[in-house]
Length: 313
Image (cartoon, rainbow, N blue to C red; front, side, top):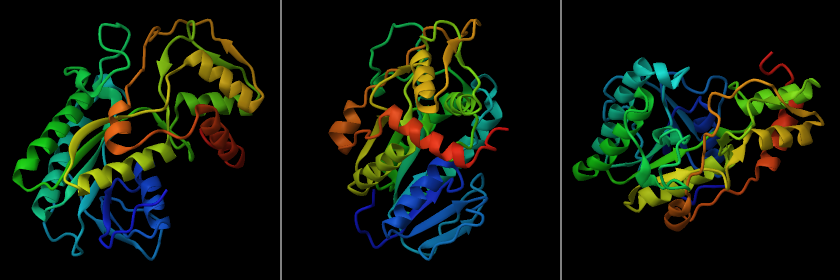
């Protein structure tokens, strides 16, 4: 995946994070210069096309903080809560960051691709909404973190009337892939299989998630960048090709690792959660579609785990 030839660099916030670092690598490998903007910048990582600009994004970003001309910011920087139920402090920090980054882009006459989240949707235990869920079905008062994401989406769209060149919010659902930095259900299942431990799921295993492989997230960013460069504005679901139950995930992990998937005998407090998101708008408008089947993505993660067995010890 490469970004079509552009002379201007791309500004990426959150370049140290899972999403941002992968995108930077894709852009640099394709010959696109990158300006990594944020509080801590890509420690130990260098590239002739990579410029690092250290700045605390909770503060107003001066117009001249980046001397080079750019036309788009891919904004991945965010404080991630340990739980959505207690996310007020992270939401307050994210609001400051989002407002400052979008206003910075506006002052520079650039566009923004904003990394939003499927957390903006009501937890799908109650099938009272459309399935698969379109972008119009987002809800409020779910958590401080989710409400802030919705606020930032609206703030970006409104900024189009005051010199923001374009805006796309990509609502990313359950991104995964190497380097398995965070402890997730995928990393736990694969690690248990690697250690010859049972791969256990709670309840009946009916709870769903829609996992999106990191390469597909990066290709969505690239497609959204072109959309924004053309002056586009919109909100898009970015998800895998289909939802997967926890039982199905455990069985796939067992297949990949040679382990065994069994029920834990414990109840699942999220029994019946549905994670079905429509990606038709992204297909139609961005010409984007996920390319990595879950089984293939799990295999790539397991290959990485085998060479980094210390993960989550």
